[in-house]
Length: 375
Image (tube, rainbow, N blue to C red; front, side, top):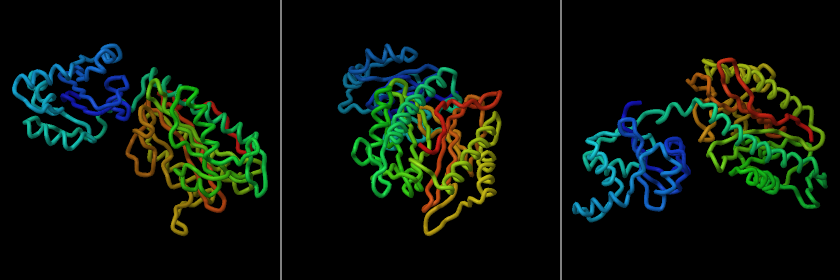
């Protein structure tokens, strides 16, 4: 990419900004890559930290530029005016911005005679292919997820079965909320931040992104999906397991065995230059062949109606996508989830999720956690 680049965002929530500067800043600030060199404009609060943590960037004082503009007669100093002044000094009149750039700021820059071009697609395409150092950071976040999942699994093992199959933990009802708190606390202690961890039992889990609520029960599948972010690096990990407290029904066992087989098929296919759409199609074909159709029934979807996987890095869901309409090809360095699932109200649901690193020699499973249905 040879364009001069502009981002205005915070790096806590904007993955492109975090990737560009490598430090967490909670408030929006200015990033410019001009003729290949990185510049960041920081307020006085962040100047010292930025010079240490973003040493690859030239750190510019926003206050100094604001004072200069005031001396030049500007009464009210805006972010757009500071950007224009810096670009004018560099004799640059055009910048490329990401797709999610603020519309109001773009409008003001254009009014100030700065040409703003929206960069189509990924702003930093190289983000999709992870370096060895990035894979280590993702693996560390995944380990935090596994720590939390282990605590959740142990709580299920230790739970007693009360009336109407309701689970009890230390003589109190074991709810989705309680089990989620156990998992999230363990992740926090391991250095991660967990948000909206999924602990969904029975028919609740037939909605794949339902977080879960209420008392959990024995003899029905409980889907636990854990996806924390490392507090130190900002990278994510992602893992899902499905458990049954006690004896699973034959219907659930068949679901589990079929999903596990589908995951194996998808995992084997995660190779350099593989077409993502074809990988998803192989899983879908298996499920159909095994008698698990995907359709709309009684107003809701049943079967396998989400993608097989997605990229993970500084965002939980990023390129590439492995799904029915994906045009992506897998490349060495991609880190993707492998997470087929089957969902049938009245029976329950099963989802299993590992993380694969695509290499020139085939896929490598970054996930270490065991797969067991009955606990």
